[in-house]
Each structure stands twice: as structure tokens, then as C-alpha cells.
Amino acid sequence: MNHRGDILKQIIQINDEQKQIIIEIEKECEIICQELEEKYQFEFKYNDKQLVIELIRMKKGKLATALDILEVDYESFIEVGIEHEEEYYPNAYIPIWKCKGEWFQKIGYLTRRTKEQLVIMISSLVKEMLADKEGE
Image (cartoon, rainbow, N blue to C red):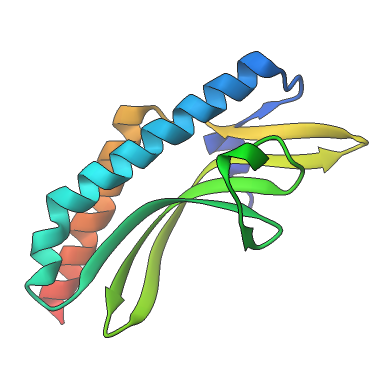
């Protein structure tokens, strides 16, 4: 079952105004990721693990930059994971923006989540990860 419509809103007219909104949302996400990673990091260091919360930009499976934001197949998402003994274990994927080519035009999908909702969601994911760690 595809719930993409629940969390991402479709944008058909992608213009400069939309581009600025997307850029701002991605910047906010980078700040949220950094703040939450710093907030919870010490609880993971205790078990010799490193918490990783970051905004990732990809295009066709390769790393991309904010300059690619309106390119077809560009996507950005927040990834939450753990690094342990040089291995990376992804735990959650939160889509932020996707740009697709459909019917010869660019169509975007942007998160409906607010900054506050993202903070709450990531914090609960991290708390679940900590609870799982306690159960090990």
C-alpha cells in the first residue's frame, strides 16, 4: 500500500517560489538533524556507537547537492542510523522532497510535515532506538 500521498504533497507548477520553499525546508532539516544528533549523541557513545541523523540528497542513487533540487530523479530525505565498528546501520528514512519526470513535465513531491512534526518524529525514532539498545 502506498501512503506517499499522505505525507508528500504533489507540486505540478514548479517555479522559483517553490524552489525557494524547498531550499528553505531542506536547510531547516539540516539544522534539525544537527541539533538532534548533538542532543542524543552521548547516549549512544556510552555503548561505543555513533548516532547519525542527516539530510541526504540523491539523484539516481548517487549523492547530489542542493543545486540539483529541480533535476528529475533528485530526492532528499532524512536518514537516522547508527555507526558501530565502522559499519553503518540505517534505521529510518523520512522523505522530504522528490522531483520526478512524469508525462514530459517535472512533478515534485514535498513533505507535508512541519518542522515541529519532524523534530517529534525523529526524537521518537531515536528514543525507540535507545529502548531497543537497552533490550540488547
